[in-house]
Amino acid sequence: MSKCEFAPFFPKLREEDYEKKSDQTDAYNCIAYAMGDEHKYWWPTPQYACYWPPGFERSNALPVLKKIAELFRYRDCENGDSEVGYEKIAFYADATGVQHAARQLQSGMWKSKIGELEDVEHTTVESLESKDYGTVVAYMKRPRPDWTA
Image (cartoon, rainbow, N blue to C red; front, side, top):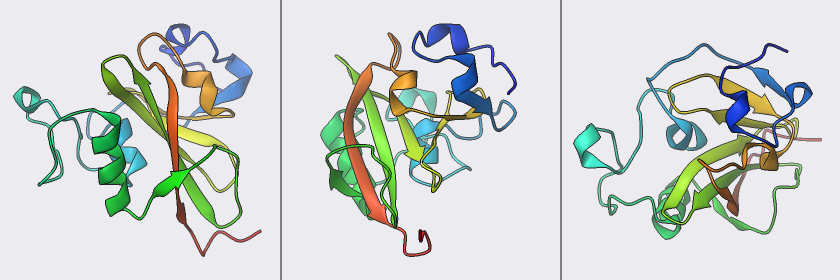
């Protein structure tokens, strides 16, 4: 596994628990990646000229992000345990709102886009809980009929 420069910012992330999967890019971010978009940088703050889905309040409040995820067929679920036939996302938040989202892969691993840095696969969703991202506050899932046992 190759070490990433951001690892020191995530105290729960051990070197053996993650793998770099892409080079750095600012073409997209974690929210975009969680929704399946690797071509736009999604963030609600208009002064940064980021994409935000039309018709939604420009806010990183959890209810807003969950409503957006529903457009992509995600529905609330209780946990991040791997389920055959389902893809899951996790939202991380601090006192100011959602700061990060991760997507679960068919293997059960999690994949995150770290801001404008790399994509990484990580073994646990909790490994990216940190001062900057906050803690996991919600899980959602959507059916993936192509994901069979």
